[in-house]
Image 1 (cartoon, one colour):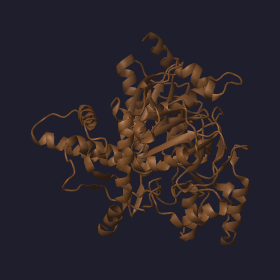
Image 2 (cartoon, helix red, strand yellow; image 1 turned 90 degrees about the horizontal axis):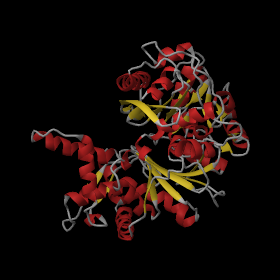
Image 3 (cartoon, rainbow, N blue to C red; image 1 turned 120 degrees about the vertical axis):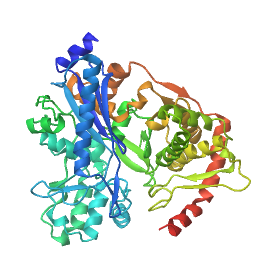
Image 4 (cartoon, rainbow, N blue to C red; image 1 turned 45 degrees about the horizontal axis):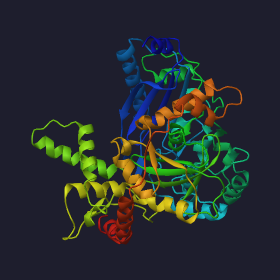
Length: 531
């Protein structure tokens, strides 16, 4: 306790803050890189004029509340105030579209990764670059705005992502970590910068529009893990800490996306390691030994925070529908006058799924709150279907919704493992789906037919990951790689708890997936019928 107190009061503690889809989390770490305090703020995206967005007010009030909750946790646990920090880092959901004019004003409401409104741009750029450009990537949003003839495009002076925006406002620096930058625009693994050939192709593509900007004029500078990305300004300190106690001058690491922070938080930045982050959305990533044989529409190529190539299968939908059903059970319990502990409710219902039939007893579910490019949907309708003969009970009901949360991911990752013969020595799971021990982990192992490990820190997620990147920047020794830093100074040989796939569950998931694939026609009909 006294060690932690002195770490905080002497300004050696390091803070990481991540903007997730439903929660903004702040994690404070000590000199051993373990979490010592945290705070969070719940928030939700809004569908405004058919655009998924978060308002600037929601962004700033959420950031300030998460920080305040962290300081309250410090005060409650250790009886001291947070006045100085040793390092700081910001992370957020990748991709999306935030553009600003010469007065640094936001030109159009923030368009998040969740929007599937850039189909024509995505298709045209993929052909132009011979490189898959997903709909949610920032460059697809920019080019779609160009194609739409949107009035704001000629006025753009700066384009960034959510954590790039926060970092800029708190430090004055227009930069991004390479992992996040690689989800704005393709990067060159050799130069650790945007791919210059593709930059020129894009500039040529829009040359006849006569904009005053070229692509490099408006994109943030690319930095790799360990590089200094500026310091917290006096204005930034006031924006972050409304109490005014936090001192300026804190070194800030390159802002990274949730993919990069997930890799760091699971110690999977090395070649042949992979991880699955499962929350509101789900993505699986494997660090590649070599390039894929060709471009796949279902697979995105991004990088680790140090610039190594990573193959990613990203799905827009994971636990939103599952959470909605759990909330319904909460309502049911409350109607009977019961007090409901949500952690206990989730744990009970998740564990019930383990009692279900391997292939879910003939039930079928789609968790599509929004579209899924891997299965060919621009929009979605959450859907539960059964036949009169299906075995409809609580165990199968929970099991099918857990299966549904990973079905699209399996479709994408099967390309890597089965078609490209990509090797992963270990897959780590992290995020909300893995909080109930052994349930999400076992189902993921069955889906991928690969051992899955979960660490005790899996629930800390990306906020801890970005804190570790800030710690690496501040504390690394000369020549020390991020891999070495994580192994030697963070995980100390801890590889988590491993679950091997249960052959019966593997067979059950494969059987269920055939039903799921055939049933996509039902989902298509639901989208058409329920406008």
